[in-house]
Length: 76
Image (cartoon, rainbow, N blue to C red; front, side):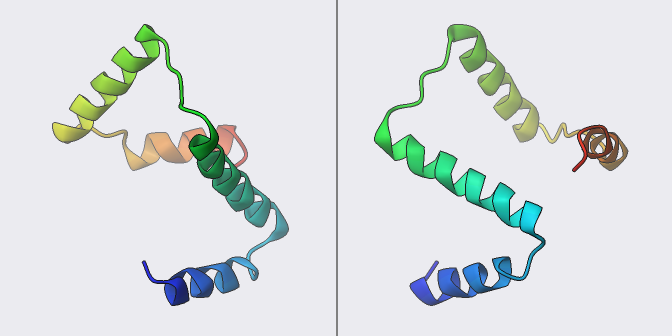
């Protein structure tokens, strides 16, 4: 992605609702924090990550209906 493309995305983000902007900022701060220190995961977490990756490779995804329910339950 070029610097111009990044600038264009940030310009569009400025037009988003405030809570969505806050969420985007939170995600960017989490990404930035990853550079400061390595992410440490437990053996159980690593196993869950590996299983999730394997499910994705097999094309096993949560249905749109289930995701809509998740978003609704969490106010997203």
